[in-house]
Amino acid sequence: GQNIDQPTEMTATEGAIVQINCTYQTSGFNGLFWYQQHAGETPTFLSYNVLDGLEEKGRFSSFLSRSKGYSYLLLKELQMKDSASYLCAVKGGYQKVTFGTGTKLQVIP
Amino acid sequence: DTAVSQTPKYLVTQMGNDKSIKCEQNLGHDTMYWYKQDSKKFLKIMFSYNNKELIINETVPNRFSPKSPDKAHLNLHINSLELGDSAVYFCASSQDRQGLGNTIYFGEGSWLTVV
Image 1: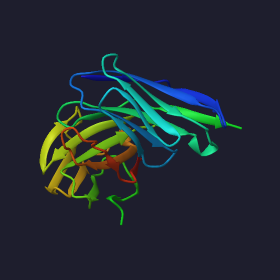
Image 2 (image 1 turned 30 degrees about the horizontal axis):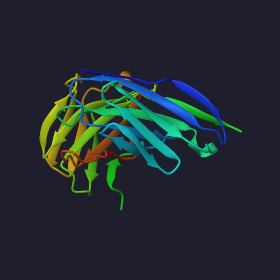
Image 3 (image 1 turned 45 degrees about the horizontal axis):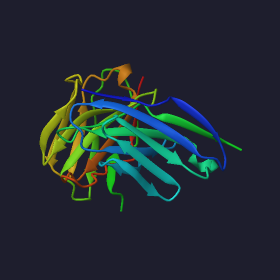
Image 4 (image 1 turned 180 degrees about the horizontal axis):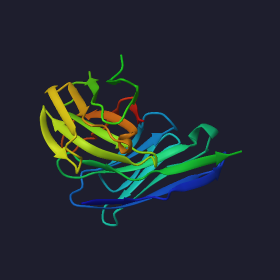
C-alpha cells in the first residue's frame, strides 16, 4: 500500500520562504508530484521528481530523496496568491497515483 | 479548448436516485481516472482506466460503476445515492511513459450534493 504524510496547515509571511515536507512509504515508486489547489478549484500541476535532487522552476522548487522516502516543496518570495492547499502525490505501480491529505498554506501580510 | 471536461459541474439530487457524471479528454492520453475529494479535502483515487481497460479499482461500493466507451471518455454512474456520496468528483487523465513525467491533468470537478 501507500502512505503519504504532510503537515495539515502552515502559515507564512508574504515575501518569505516556506518549505512543505512530505514523507511517503510506497510499494513501487515511479515518481512524486506536487499539486496546488486553491479553494473550490482544480488541482494544478507544479512539479514532478523521479530522480534524487532538486528541481527548480521559478519561485517553486521540489526536492526528492528516494532512499529516505522524503520530498519537500520550497516556495520563495511568497505572494498572497500562494495561499492554497499543496498536495503531495506518489506514483506507484499500475499508474496508481496516491495523494496525501494536502497542506493548507496561509500567506499573511 | 478544455483539456479534461466533465459534466455536470453541479448536481443536487435526492437519496436513492441514480446519476451519471461524464468525462472527456482531448489530450490523446491513454489513462483516465476518477478521484473523490471529500469535505476534508482528501483526494482519493476511485478508478483508473488504461485504453478502456480497468486497471485500478479501489475499495469503492459497487453502486459506483465506471464505463469507458473509448479511451477519450470515462463516465461514472452512481446507483442508489447516499448522503455520504456528497463530494467533489474529479476526472483526470495522463499519458504514461516510462521514465518521463506523467503529469495528471484534472477536470474542473463535479460537485455532487445528496439531500
